[in-house]
Amino acid sequence: MARSETTGKGEQPGYRGRIAPSPTGLLHLGHARTFWTAHERARAAGGTLILRNEDLDPERSKPEYAAAMLEDLRWLGIAWDEGPDIGGPVGPYAQSERRAFYLNVWHGLLAGGWLYPCRCSRRELSRIAQAPHDHLNGIRMESDEGPMYPGTCRLERDAAARLAAQVTDPAGVNWRFRVPDGEAVTFDDGHFGPQRFVAGEDFGDFAVWRRDDVPAYQLAVVADDRAMGVTEVVRGADLLLSTARQILLWRAMGWAVPRWFHCDLVTDARGERLAKRHDAQAIRTLREQGWTPERVQVG
Image 1 (tube, rainbow, N blue to C red):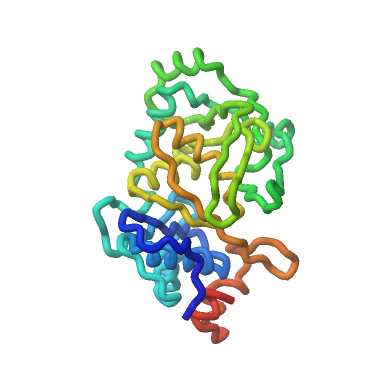
Image 2 (cartoon, one colour):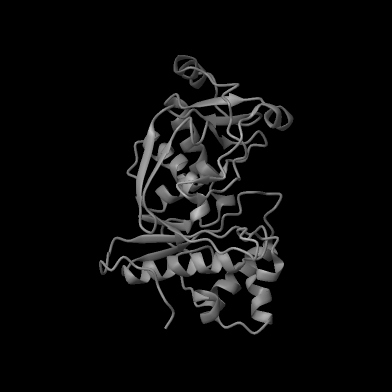
């Protein structure tokens, strides 16, 4: 029997977990281990597992990758109770079909004075932004947000409130969430234990909506997890810093924050975390090499 990472607390009938693959490439070994953990935790809790297709990026998301991820997940033995292929009560289950949910959250954050427009170009940001933290709390962090934003376009709360009364659509500029500088964001991770990050020190103001009128990852994930009733988020340890950002969004909207469980990362021979460019570690490649689902699940 495959090894599982569970809480040992028995069934939790109200448990709702999720796996959220992105169809921007083939799933790799790291994805498989994390998704298997999410599957096992949902089953151990006697709860529901949701599959959400995170096809938010219109340029990188491909239908062929979406089809491949469903096939590879089924081959692994992962079964979900709700998803884009089988439906469910809180659909749609593809982010490309959930724009109305994201706009509602954007409007709520704007009305609360949390957002401001950012007109900095990528070239400007590369010159002025502060270097990111590669490691925090002894764990390798994700770098998708890039260098820490220095607050060049930041507005004070009264100016943000005036803006909220004037703007009705996010298109045309980047929108950032103004973090409460100096506020500690703490949470008890189900795997790594107590975590603590300080807003304005460990991370800065972050993007929630792009100038090409696409919601950013942080906002979309929070909106979806809330709307789908997710009670525990299971994902890789490289997203611990994203969790701190997302907790601020949950709080700003006045919503109860879910539980968190971050999995150990699968790395290559050089100690680098796997990415979708690592074709040799793609689940599809491993299948062709004769790996069994059990070997992929637990190594």
